[in-house]
Amino acid sequence: MVALRTASEVEVRSTVNSEVYVASLFPIQNEDGEVVDLVEFAKDVTLSRDLQDKLLQTERLRALGEMASGTAHEFNNTLAGVLGQVELLLATEPDAHMERGLRLIAQAASDGAATVRRIQNFSKTSRGEEVVPADLNQIVLDAVEVCAPRWKDQSERDGVTVLIRPELRASSQVAGVPSELREVLVNILLNAIEAMPAGGTVAMRTGENTRWVWVSITDQGVGMTNEVRRHIFDPFYTTKGLANSGLGMSVVYGIIKLHRGDIKVSSEEGQGTTVTIRLPKARNLPAKPQPVIEAEPARPLRMLVADDDARLADMLQQMLSLDGHEVTVCHGGAAALEELAATPYDVVLTDLGMPEVSGWDVIGAARKLQPGICTGLVTGWGVQLEDVELNSKGVDAVIPKPYSMIALRATVAQLSELRQSRAVVALA
Image 1 (tube, one colour):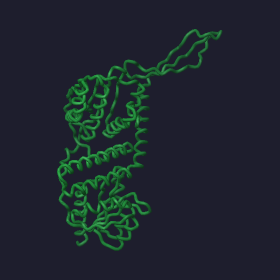
Image 2: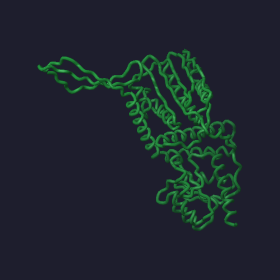
Image 3: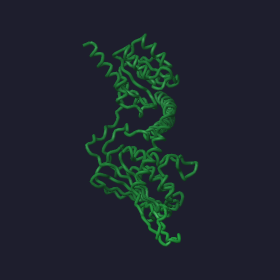
Image 4: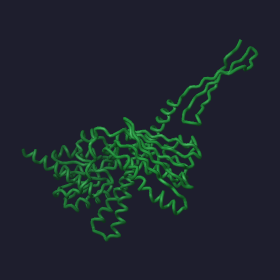
């Protein structure tokens, strides 16, 4: 008589590809209790493990987004103060040297705001930016050009040779945001270059099938272990020490997922790394938007500005006053309600996150007290506000912090036109 003992399970990963198996071993005993044979069953769990890993990755990034959303308002308020003061200084027509420095500061503040927005987007299921047809081949070439100081100039100074070899075979466009896709490829390309301290070649290939356009980036670098590869998209995970934030590949993952795409990494120690990205083809999308043209200042308006941060409120007043608007500042929502009850205005611009009386309360009261007034939220929570919520609460425009003079002027011009149309309707 033989007996089948309880099985033990062992996870086996293929050394040739990324397949994963669970092997179950059943020892068979004879009548004396001796093991006389083994029965082995192997189950391919590659798909289920991939799905589990993707779910865990999504939840990690969602947690990062929720954490970022709690601090986004403070970050954006700080950046708004920096960018606003730069805009006011630029309006004084500084000399060329000073202007160049100010514009670099403005660009740094704008880039910081973009980073906050991307981290916030990890907790969203849809994007705020307009998706347009984009040429993936051109984006690859742009990324190569952006990284030229690193792969060409710095490598030559270090005495090594790094070559970037584009092989562009895709002909269809992808549905995407070109600036974000450039950021993705730049980030991956820089990682590939850093993985080849002794030099080497990076191949960047594009291709397509009936549904997808893809790009692969293959380096001849040091490669990575399975453990590193499994954690490569985790927020704050890095093998580069304290000098690196560990957010680069997390941002890459978030951008690709918001593009409804897919990203995979294959690598082995000493054998280099290949990153493959698939993006949906552009179908029934609007053409690329026209470049933004700076709007002319709107006709002078009577405007009320409400913000509990006195520095930001006074700065916004100065920026609006440059275009001839008559601006009254209220440092807080309660003061704004009193002012709206006493004085008529064309436009009210209010911060959202204010204690006791929020921006929602200010806009609601403005609509009741002055039915023809136009309303705008000036806020650091911009990407988290849905159109349905804004429309239901009577918000005519959103000015995300930090904002430039051009963006502010364009929004005020739209509010001015809306105010005029409401005045015409009221007289009819």
